[in-house]
Image (cartoon, rainbow, N blue to C red):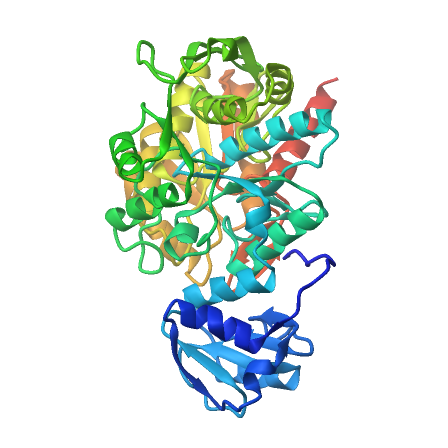
Length: 527
């Protein structure tokens, strides 16, 4: 579901105003069905959804599946002009452009009156950990802002969107321009000053974030992902998209521990950006370091050391997240917060209660038979980090993994997931994960050879809930028969309550809902 723009005092623009913006960047190839009065037409709405139109709409003809009929429908519903990359031969003023994506972004900004100019936006990207990082940031800023009796931070992530009025489950990590600027405009209307934004490689590559500057930016890490015909043609293209976040950043935080940090530092130097360095590696000097890192049953504890300002050092900071790898994510959030003037008390309080829906959520049975785990892990880097943590914190357990891979895209993930599961899991359930238009069995066929070659037994069922229930029963039966403990992990979908299939988002019980219910019911029966 997309956010609806809240009422605010609007400035009225004409079609000529939009045309002038497009001409200023050399985007206009021509105009069609143009009259002397066309430029004076009042534009009251901008939309690319022909089903949701009203009077005086400037209609954007976009999308690989766009049909001329959509424009005809839009005309019937109140469109007064259209924007397209070719003449669609209708009796309506049209602006034809050579770069529709850039044109759309310019039109969205004018329509919503450049709300980004009134906001301090923090931008985070990465292959793994960006959702956790932005959630830590949001929690810290919200505690700090509440203390000052100020509105909470706006939030745009792969999990949730919050605009100061409503909170919605996300559809895209980085929304398309009209949806993105709706959220930003609503944030301004709500009196919000700070926005935490998670950026995808697609959002950066396709210009959805054009003209948005980040007061602080950080690339959590970069590893191969999202390689397909409809995403990134190769790793170099993907890497370039991630590095593009630097072009939007006023200050850049760089972890010295990660691969390609040298490229980040090099690009930041070329742009003459202020760089703030981070590290969780013992003995490696950085502006902010996490030291004396310890894993506890309820989370992580570490010390924060600041070379920039010793008064910012924090001793024995508790973070209610599992997995040593989350130290890196938390440190980015802590450093940005300290640089922004957030006090230590707010940071401590926020991170002691932080929880990322669908991320490293643990559901243990009271008798120790099984640990249920729900996480969004969906690529090689996240799988490897998860299994590394399990081997350290839950050795001598059977690992039962439930996962799938997305259809139509990111095909490079499939063999990588098969290898990671094949090398670490004891049993695998292959299930649905936003299969799109691709057959379920076709997706699995790219993973099963890597399970078979490593001798890992597997089964397949497109219904995620069936897999979780069966895996739970298998783990309990194993414990009763042999005393062996298991970790049952549902991976990829987290707390999402829908599956994308054949162009439709089908409602499901989220992995969190199913796992929590099974464990709570089992524990209740033990009493």
